[in-house]
Length: 190
Length: 404
Image (cartoon, rainbow over all chains, first blue to last red):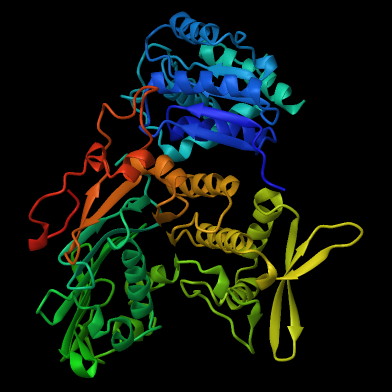
């Protein structure tokens, strides 16, 4: 019997994909079909492909969930969310809901914010991480740059955290993202 | 190319001159490199050359067999071939291996090694020519030890391991982690005859049963990992390998889950795609265990569409997470779309001319919105200028071919 992918993952780059797969695989989801922008960035590509995959979810019975990962990049969370909402409306698609298997993660300012916070939290270090600085460009002062091999373990570590007991200082969008991921995982399990 | 994590063993540069379609050809490699290009541009030749140098350095082959006169460039009158490989080994540094072979009597299929050298971080470890060999110790101190050269056998392959030559031996052992696979499932045998057990399979993997026999005894963890991956989903229903004695030989069977009892099939009774998947899983498990180098010619060949992306993603993960180095050739659209941008090296060649190589760099206006064209579409149309490839008009001169 052919392999059936239940979760479609739409990401800007391999790092986002490795992070998200780290989380999903830790939660027992291995049938993932990652779609990664070949250029490695470009929010418009992710936006269009994500909306297309949400539409596919409504059309094909095998799919159970679509997970998108899109850096906020200083553009504003509400602006990013509205862009996607508008694109969904244009296609007569329902608004996003992680409990219905349609989830978009929006790290502010980008995925590196989450990766550094998770690394420091795992190491038991208290290093403030704000959501405005572009850590992709410059790591926190005095710390080594995150590299490719840190991404999947960060997703796996996130899976071990309780979204209701995240400490003060956790980036707000990571807090929201983890809650959404829990709902998403429950939704695709059904 | 995106900045990449280094693997423990990483071949970073290959140079070949006067060999088949390569004339002063340099290929620079990262932890993940994907060779692209039309048929006949030298992609498979790159992989085959790696296998030949490995077999030469590890004493599995002689220059007469590995580098016959027919491998000289047809348009070149020179009778010498030069090969150079740069290898980064964790905790050691950069090794540079250089081999020069002279075909003095091509009509009689005679050649000889006229230069074989190895340096580490710029300092010599091994210096050989057709008259003498000088073997330096790990500290490059004191007098070099002399050795008698053999014109057809690598001197490095003949060095016995001692306490003062661990660096040279580490270089040689790195080659033993190199797997070069150009699969042909139709040739794969389920039979391992006699005591046949091979540490490094042939590129077509026709001796897979003997390779798995070696792995089962010497590297049981590799077999277990491969079986786990196959069981976990890459080959639905698969449970385990089983070697059945048959006279002097062993027959490799694959056990599949079935009710009321398991079904067993000889390896060569499976489909080409299933055989390819099995070999790829064992190769991935072996490369992971060795932290080595995996070179795959068209890994998507023979695989069903649902199987291609998962294998490619796992290879990409392994390389980018630093578990082992991966070099692929790719024609399949899924592979091209997934990997060309960021890791692609485009090989190009005029008919009967030398190969040139270009790093794929997508033009800004090609991919960024929903009207973007897939890389595979661009390649299929031959619109490779969008990949940053500008073919020159004087390629037939072929003076040098380096990454542009």
